[in-house]
Image 1 (tube, rainbow, N blue to C red):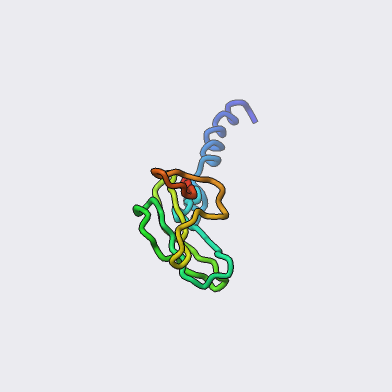
Image 2 (spheres, one colour):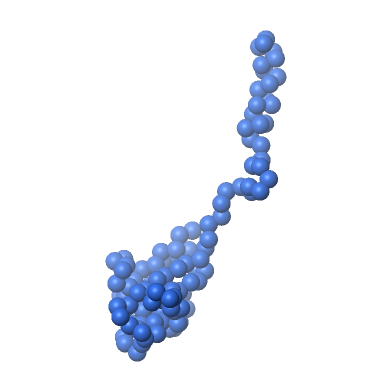
Length: 116
């Protein structure tokens, strides 16, 4: 092929490489903004609540799954949050499975980081 013929094919090749994805695929995958926190208290049948900075540390019940793990799900805006768990009527405690901490006032909480 001559140089002229190849130069005419170059824009076509570029257009094919930059074409839209096949039908059914629409751009990049969208990540979920759902935050999920799990807590498995040792041998407790008492209800578990979560107290979080997202709602002024008002206790919210967590759903208990069949395997005894308490689960909290919520869509939260991007930032750091403090949270604690309360089992039954016991005083709230930081998440034992989370070593990261956030101080809110003079109280130490577990830190939850929600990325942008």
